[in-house]
Length: 488
View 1 (cartoon, helix red, strand yellow):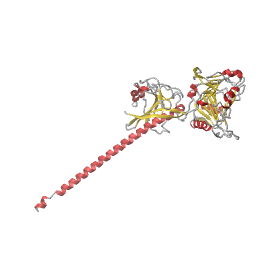
View 2 (cartoon, helix red, strand yellow):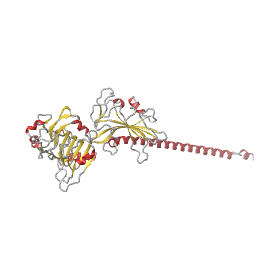
View 3 (cartoon, rainbow, N blue to C red):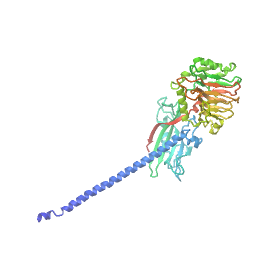
C-alpha cells in the first residue's frame, strides 16, 4: 500500500508532459505555416513586381519598332527622333502609367515615383519636365501591368562605366554609344544604343527596377558600291538605255549628305555585278555620247565599273537575292500586293494612289514593299525610305525618292512619262532573280537587269547619298544587349 501511494500522480505528470510536447509541436507547425505563407507571399509579390517591370521594358522596346502598330511613330508622333537621327544625351523620354487619381512625374524630385536612378547614373536629375507619353497597357478601361514609368535614353561611357571602342583609357561623357552588330563603339558605326529602364510598384509597396541596353538590328542589305547597280552573269547582259535628249539627266556617284552637300566620298556611278560579255562596254553604249560626262564617280566619266567583287559570298545567286527580298517583305512597314493579272508573270500593278495614304516624309521613312509591279506615273509626290518592287518599276521623274530602291525579282525599271526635274537620292539596285513565270531562277547565275528610259524622259537622274541610305535601313528588331536588375 505504501508503494502504491508513492506512485500516485505519475500519470498526471506524464499527461502534462505529453500535452506540453503536443503544444510545442503545434506551435512549431503554426509558426512554420506562417513562415511558409510569408515566404510564399513574398515570392508572389517579388514575381508580380518583376513581371510588371518587365512588361514596362517590353512595351518600351516594342514601341521603338516602327512596324509595330503601336509604335511611337504611330501613337506619339515626334516622341522619338526620326529614323537615323541620334537621340541626344541628357534627353530622356518617359512612358508613364498612373492608376486612376495618381500622378506619375518621374522628372519631379518631389513626386513619389521620382526617377532617382537617373540621378545616380548620370549625376544630374532628368530635365523637368521631360518628354512623356502615356502607356498603352490599359485596354478598354482594364488596368494593365502596374509599372509606373519607363525611361528611354541615350548612354555614354560614363553612364555605363565602360571604356568602349576605341579604347583610350578614359571615360568620355560626350559621344553616344553605338552598336555595329558585334561591338560597342563611340565612332557612330552601326545603330545607337538605347537604355530602357522600368520602375514597377505594387499596391503593397513592393518595388522593382529593371533595365535593358538595346539597339536596333538592321536587316543585312547588299552593299551599295554604286549609285545604280545592275545584275548580270555569264550569258545574261544588262539592258540599259539612258535618256537621249535630256542634258540635265545625271547619275552621280559623288556622295551627298541629306541636305545635298558633297561629302567628298566617291562611289561608282553605275556598277555591274560581272564584267563577262563586256558588261561595262555594253552599259556604256546605252549612254548617249554627248551626255557621258554626266555620269561621274570614282573614275573618269562615264564611270561604269564592275563592283561584283564587293558583294559577299552570301549574296551571289538568284536564291540568295530572293531570300533577301523575302526577309525585307517579312519585316516591312507596308506590303502592297496588287491583284494578280491573268498572264505570266501573274503580277498585278500598284500605282501612286497606293503610296499616298502611307504619309512618307523626311521624318517618317518607311520600308515599303510592292509585291508585283509599281507604276507611279503622274503620282507627283515624294517617297522616303526603302522601296522594294518584285515586278517592274515604272518610274516617273515627277517624283523624288530619298533612300533605297530595290527592284529584285523581274528586275526591270522603265518609264512612260517625260516628267519634271526630280531625282532619286540614295542608291538603286536592280537584280533579276525570277523568270517569266515568276519562279526563282535555277542555278547560280543571276539574270540581266533591265533599265530602259525614254530618250525624252525628264528628271535630273540619280544622286548617291550615304546619308539617305543609312536613314532608310530597315530594322528587324531591337536586340537586347544586356538585362539586369537595379538594386534599391
